Image 1 (cartoon, rainbow, N blue to C red):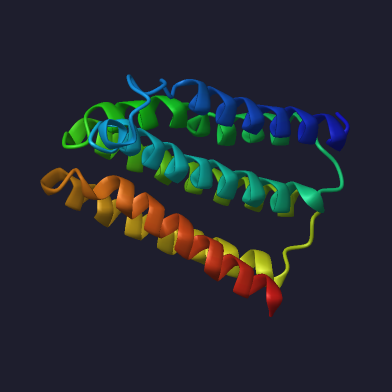
Image 2: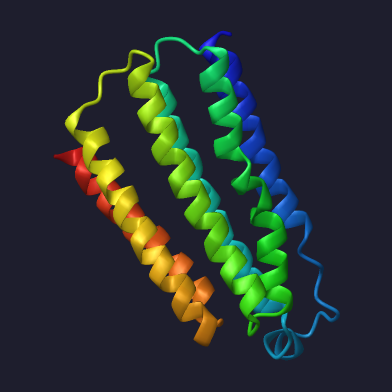
Length: 188
């Protein structure tokens, strides 16, 4: 398979996920600003924005993993699709957390999707190295960061058992932290 086909498929996948998320947003029941501010609409927008940045960070990580890949075989293609699988649940978990922000099940699943995606990107990065991409210092550092992120998300899942409302803030915080650290790592 040509690398461009894998990139095109993956880029299209990320675009579709973001489109599905925005289509899940229902228009507010009123055009009155004060009523909108007192409704659940702002919570819905907040959940969407967090998940948008989450999916964007996954897309950037995926792009950076695949960019220097020399060849794509069927094993890498399958692993790529398995890496995309948990991301396909982001619209569902976003809607569920928005619908029931104080419940454990949606909160833990929301964190779980993030955790599984981080693990999948870790293994995808390792497979890219095995398939001829030279593992550089940046890739090594980013994979170490992914391991730490897994630990933080596991701790966050335990905390979400007691405080489910923290799930979206944890995901937002981890996404922002990843963005900052990843950019600094690439600048060095």
